[in-house]
Image 1 (cartoon, rainbow, N blue to C red):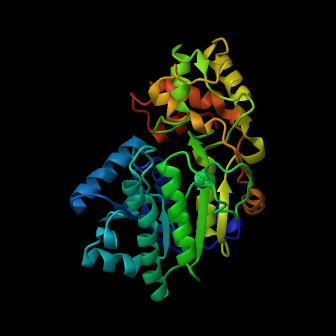
Image 2 (image 1 turned 180 degrees about the vertical axis):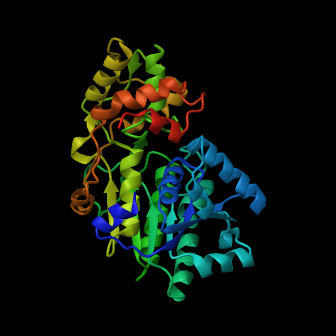
Length: 375
């Protein structure tokens, strides 16, 4: 987002330094690219690695997925070694002091997104890790430096809750589908209780797919696995409720929202970054897939025993019980022109990109995808 846009939207124009975690993941990678595009923000990436040189090497791998021709803005990106699953974030004394002396805001994207980890393992990153980041935020606040702390949670802290799940809701006695949801719920609950007067924003995206304009994505999970299996004729039966809802949003919407929440004065509290009322039913999603792949509709069945294992992991998200309310997000972001594009409007683009990149086996950078997209 350009500095001109920042001024037009009444955002802070002062320069700052953002500490970004999770820069090697899908969402963190997109946030990093957008911060690089700004000329008034420096970035320090906290990267898990054995040394700073190894961390820089991991970051070069991120640039290789983003760019064919890296922009000069990457000169404003620094790196420190750290690990959110370790006490003290595994920051050495000199690196911790560097962070405390320079950072003004935190965007915490790092998470373990595996659905089948033992709960103790998932908690170290997704539950205790956020508290470790909050401790760092508190140390920055004690120095008078902290302007914003953004914690990226998930809309699926709603778990198996039945009914209207508002942005202000959290612990409603819900159960969970897997240890990912359970550990993310515990992490969010812990930091909200511990934050006190810190300038905390909690963002809860739903299922995130490729860019609505270009289709670009470096990962092919959740919606992509079942779609690829269906395109290859491996899912003639699908165990979903046709009226069940799949809440899916594009990476550009989520990233634009997070950058706005970082910049806007006074932004605080919880925000659902979801499709909400525009989310598709499974029947509508299947119709889109049938048209795109020119295949007959699959049989909808109650028993999922014939479903490929890798696809079946994600099928519970094609029919969540909760209705995800996003009133606060729409009220704040809508006037800025930031809203979730309905999946039906860009579904062909994410499939075209998936097939062009051979479902992730052929490298197509974010930059190349943008250059291919008509203005």
